[in-house]
Length: 82
Image 1 (cartoon, rainbow, N blue to C red):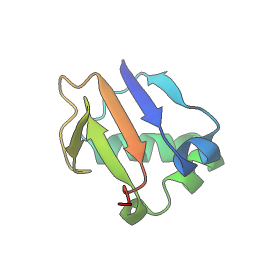
Image 2: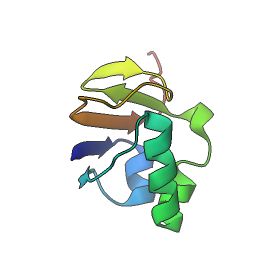
Image 3: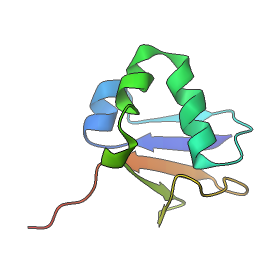
Image 4: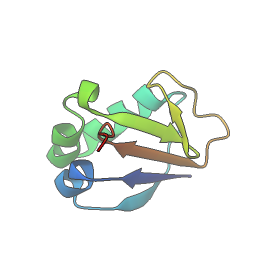
C-alpha cells in the first residue's frame, strides 16, 4: 500500500486530499497510468504531466522513478516563487 497525496488543483479535480492505493506499479508513471484508468476525474487530473510534479517520501522525483520501498507519493503543480 502506498499513500497518495494530491495538492492544489490536482486535489480539486480528483476530489480527495489523499488515499491509500494498492499497487504493484514499478514506477511513478505506471502508477499514474493505473490512476488514469480508474475514473474520468483521474484522467483529467493527470492529462498534462508537464504541469505536474511528484515527490516520493517528500523528495522531488521524476515520473520514471521506481516505487520500490516508497511509502508516500505526492502530486502537485510546480511551485512558483514570490
